Image 1 (cartoon, protein in one colour):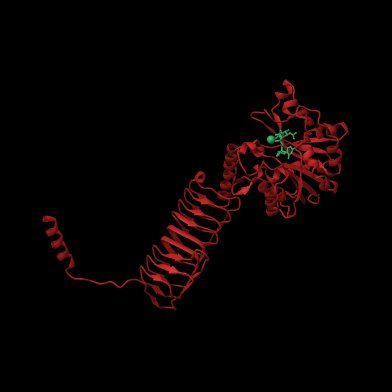
Image 2: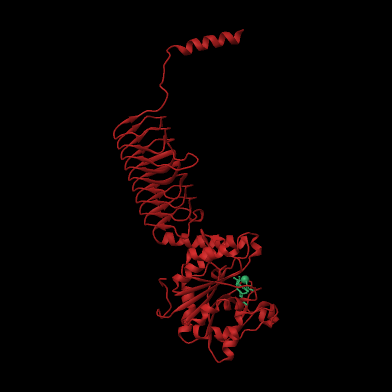
Length: 457
Ligand code: UD1
Ligand code: CA
């Protein structure tokens, strides 16, 4: 893992424990809550990626029983993360203790995060760790809640955090407190197990509360601290409406970052980005464009309205859309043009090539400066296998042609309009594959006379 936002002392080791055993019944889904996506990545994936960015040197994820799907996602995002199963859901402290084996290996800092809280920034994790480096035993992340109902309240004295009182256990007076627990915590590694093992379940919910370690640490004479963040960052997702709210916030961040890096978004609120969308400078994106996962857009490109892109690379100065669809493996060469109602999949379009109207190119390579006429279709699939079409540099494909793969069109070759091409063409050849035209002079005059006679009778 490469720390980019490491805490004040970058040498400190850090174990991140992510709690992801939630069932998420309010999602009304077959899929576990933490696998639902925002900006094309699971919420759990966001949290794990952020922790890596924040300098976690080790990660453990606590999942529910029989959740191979969650385990698979974890392995996809973070090969180093260890997986622990919490058999019974007995509370957040119990969940953390499910990763006892990871906690037993000494690290400087332990961070606890929730898998359904995808908006936390890497800086925040670092902010939590700073007081640990300065000697605090426990640091809790707080925020000013607009509506504190349901959250744990921070009981403070001056800047000291004395305890965290869960909503259900709080007195009326305590419930008036608006500084709430965001859920994230940082614990000194050498104390973590000892503090967690002292947690009891004598509370309103009968659960082992992670939050109790604040009071426990203080009773043992340790210092505790608070790190305050915005309410947006602690936004947790329990239902589809909160998922959509998380998507809105992440999209807003991605748009701001794109604009800050030199991309013009004419109407940013209408452009949807992916967590991994990469832009060069002086890119212009017109309104209503959707970026799926894995898109790289180089300098000086223009993406017109209503285009949908995924798994595509667009080289400098190229122009795409309006109404273009780029699918995985589309590579649009420098200064190339892809026009309206064009679909491109697993195809390299050479520099300066043009495919301007109503075409499908799949499993193909198109040489530099080739011109693909309107309505050209690569017939790449026979119901069983996929086959390639190779089009040479400077070739000219006449409109409304079908290129039946596997096939090669040589450099500089021509294909006559309306052809069905089933045999390869050498360089500079002309391929025609269509019915020969006949001309019958005066035919229309005879036709009209006969037809009018018939109508009169
Ligand atoms: C928790 C905090 C509360 C804080 C709030 C912020 C505790 C006791 N309370 O309350 O102070 O204001 O988060 O959102 O920590 N989990 C498990 N196993 C369990 C229980 C929970 O994995 O046995 C996971 C959940 O999936 C979830 C997270 O831990 O991701 C938090 O649990 P939840 O029950 O939602 O805690 P809250 O009551 O919201
Ligand atoms: Ca919760």
